[in-house]
Length: 262
Image (tube, rainbow, N blue to C red):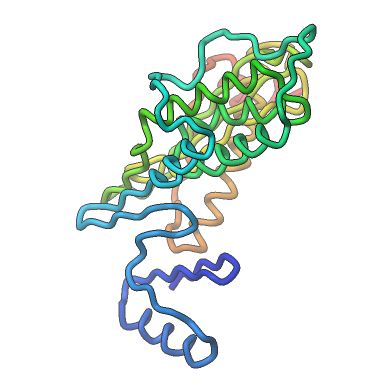
């Protein structure tokens, strides 16, 4: 049985319903608890359970977010960011209200719990929370326009015979205008759906696209090792090594030849 605890909220899952019932009885003997039945809503995340799978989303949270920033009637866009747009203007002094911007970015970060499609754009905008300018707020509102058209998006976990974890790693190169650092990104799928993803600026300046890709692959490998240990605790043992897909041949060659590690 797996018990997930967040402050005073509990999620309990187990293949045998009698074990769950016994656990609830024992807990109610010790604590004042309410049994809410089958999970449908938890920490702002909606769960729709069907015979052939589970769909999780944050559509209500997305709608509330649009209303909070008066964007519920805005025009929609098909992509959250404009390609090759410059997000740093050193000569501009058109700062925006910091509290509002930070609140928006924090809300977008929480929404990315079920929306990997906004992870990169939200991570990018979070770099300017110290002193946001008008261009950053404009881009953040574009993300809201994208969310309005995709508020019902979520993750569909269908029943699958395969429980193998598969990883994907990628990176841009020196796209940060402030310090020439690159951005790493990875995601991992288990069976039918992506369940783990990340987008983050690298800690060092890569001197080539190959090096940037190698750093991203290294971060993804660390995550893969952690996921393998976590899944082992949950009874989903990964007997084979986790496959990590990389789209840079030079990076793959370096990972396969220890001579190049230096």
